Image 1 (cartoon, helix red, strand yellow):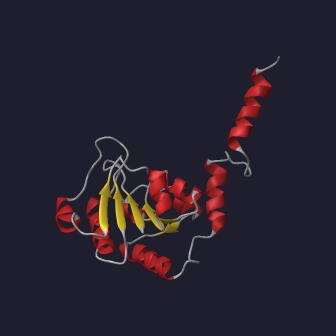
Image 2 (spheres, helix red, strand yellow):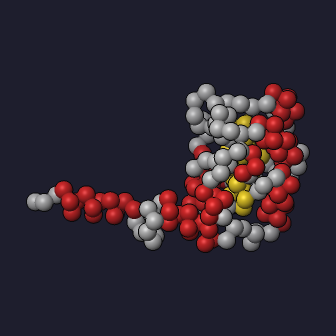
Image 3 (tube, helix red, strand yellow):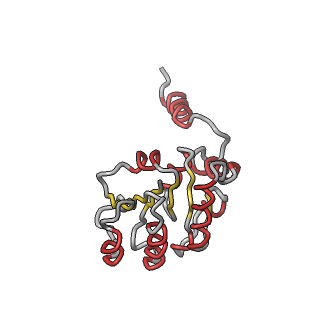
Amino acid sequence: KIVFMQYQSNYNINKDLIWLLLSEIASNNGIQLIIKDSTRHGTHYSSNHFLENYGNVQNVEFVGNEANSPALIEWAECVIAFGSSIGIEALCQNQQLINSYYLISNRTHFEKFKAALNAGSKSEVMSHIKKLMSNSEYNVKSNGKEKLFKEFIYGGKDKHDVLESYYNKITNEYLTY
């Protein structure tokens, strides 16, 4: 079960490479593929050719904003995303994240911290999928994920309860009664 999280079309993506990748994944009947459209309004950019070929195939489903992204991530065995913070949600849920960075010209912190199964080509994505399907122990090293969390969730500090730290800061500074 794979969820492919689409990205906004105006963010330096290569649409042709996306549809080549999705065609290869969809051609594997052993994979249930859900293609989740971007949550931003007006960013639907599906390929008509892809829809014609796979729109009625049982192992491929297209979903939009009616589908809750965190729930889809929870359902999935693997999430494919690139250049999007939705990848952090996948990592927070301890899901396997394939960061298919070759589909976008921008670079992200997923590559910098090696926080995901980074893929620089379609063959690397397919290799990760094959390994994930055959080996439940195949995953990214957690230290990259922990470094990413430290930087972006914990503000450069060690793991802590973020809400509690904000509560304490606010109550200590502003509640003097």
